[in-house]
Each structure stands twice: as C-alpha cells, then as structure tokens.
Amino acid sequence: MCDLGLVAPCRAAFMEGVMKIWKAAALAVFALAGCGENSSRPSPPAATDAAPKPAIWKVADVGTTVYLFGTVHVLPPTLTWHSPAVDKALNEANAVYFETDTDVDPEVFREILQRLGMYDPAERLSDRLSKQDFERLKAALIKLDLPLVAVESMRPWYAGIVISEAVVRRAGYDVSSGVESVLRPAAQGAGKDIRFLETLEEQLAAFATLAEEIQVRFLISGLAEIDGAGKELGDLINAWKSGDVDALNQLLIVDDLDAIPELYNALLKHRNANWAPEIDKLMKSETGTFLVAVGAAHLVGKDSVLEMLKPMGYTAERVQ
Image 1 (cartoon, rainbow, N blue to C red):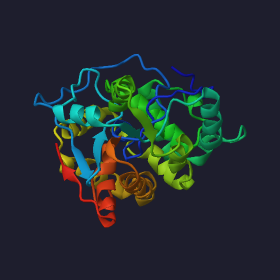
Image 2 (image 1 turned 60 degrees about the vertical axis):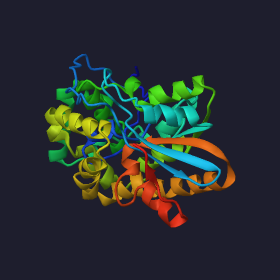
Image 3 (image 1 turned 90 degrees about the vertical axis):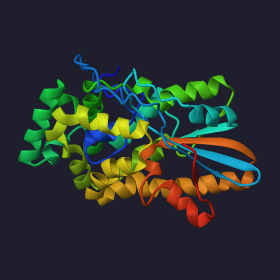
C-alpha cells in the first residue's frame, strides 16, 4: 500500500473517469490504485448466478483475427468471469494487447505523477474549491476515513481517483481480482507477447489535461452517493458479467459521462479514436490471432472502438 501524503507510486488500478467517481473505479483506466487502506471491507453485493458471458467481439480477414474483450479493472474477489469464449480467445492469441503498461519503474511513475497530479508546494486543493464543494469533500473523506491532508496537495483529477479507489474498496471490490490482474499473468505464463495501446503518461494525461473546472466536477460528482455505491457497482458488474452491452451503455455513458462532454471526449472518444487505427494497422501488417482487452466502456456506445473500426472496413462480430 502507499502513503498518500508522500504520493508513493502504487501500480495497480487507475480508474477510468465516468461521472460518478466510484463508478469510474470499477469499469475503467488502469494505473494507480492501492492508495489509502480502509479497514472496513464489506462483501460486495452478490453477482448473478448465471454462467458468465462477458461481451467479446472479433474482426477478421483472410489471415488475421482480432478478438476485442471488454474488461473490468476492479472486481469482487469471489466473482467467476471466465468462460469458454474468453479462454478460446486467450489460447488462440499470439499476442495480447492491454491499455497501458502499469509495471513501470517506481521512480518513473513517481516523476510522472508528481508532474501531472500534484500542485506546487504553495498550492492547495481546498483553495480551488467553492465553500460548498469543500464541505462535500470533507464529509466524503470522513466517511472514507481519509485525512484531508492526504489529498490537499493533489490536483482535482488525482484526488478524485484516490477517493474513487477508496469507495470501491469500501464496497468490497479488489484490483487484484480485476480482469487485467488475472489475464496478464495468464498470458505471460502461456508465452504470449504482451503489447500496449498507449503509454502510462498518455493515459494519465487524459485526466491531467482537462480544464481544472472539469477536474473539479469529476472530483465532486457522486460524493453524495457514496453510500449507494455498492448497489450501483453491483448493477454494473452484473451487466458486464451477463454481456448486457445496452445496460452498460446506459449505466456508464448515458447516465454518467454524457453529463460531462469534456470528460467523455478525453477518456473515451479521443482514446478510442487513437486505438482504432492501431487495430487497423495490426490487421494489415500481421497475420495470426490477437486479443485486445480494454475497459468495457471503450466497446459500447456510439463512439466505441467497434464503431470507429467500421469506416476502416471492419464490422465486428459478437462471439459472446
């Protein structure tokens, strides 16, 4: 675990920014969690008993097949999500793509985080908040047993991530149970080539380059709903496990991200627009089978990677 006050580099789950900050933590970006332990860890709501069938698609031509698997970066430790289709995609893959490489040198991580996530020593987060928002923040921190000093030196986006992670852990979810935390070691153990769609700095910059007022909206949104986070996260996980992409689109995008277009563009639309050409390049330059495992939010909705592949000549086939 890491000392929030010292901003030690924690390399686990950096949660993708959906409007409600705790919802962001469950279906999301991958890089920063494990900061700030909370002794209260209730069991998450029970998942559905039906056989898991998280959504998987594929695009293919004569010589190349690319499976696209929407993941969840933080899950209940007891959740079973493997399925024959997931195992088939992994077994057939020559290489597995993830969003970013979080296994970086701690000093490199520290430098990036200091530069993108921290204020200068004379600046404080509380000075950037209205009186009402500051009171909301303090109340949330008390609920989460986090001291104000832990976040005072953080820019709003980073403070939002730290609080998100605490909310998700409080609800009984665990980054070490997330899909990537299981899938990457399995792929490495099977001798698969491991590749990434973006750098760690590019991923963090998606947050850090947002205007400060948008960062504050990200931080403050959802603080009043912390107590209901467990049920909301349970709904999301059940929708993901059952492969209900319409429900995921509603919960993640329509109900949340659409309210902050700048956040939607930075965290989903623009990144999807960068990833689709990489898949096109892969299809044109290599033969064989490949697995692309990215946050489920990137594969649903009108600006998904799947939609952005269509003008390039690829129509994804749902295989699960």
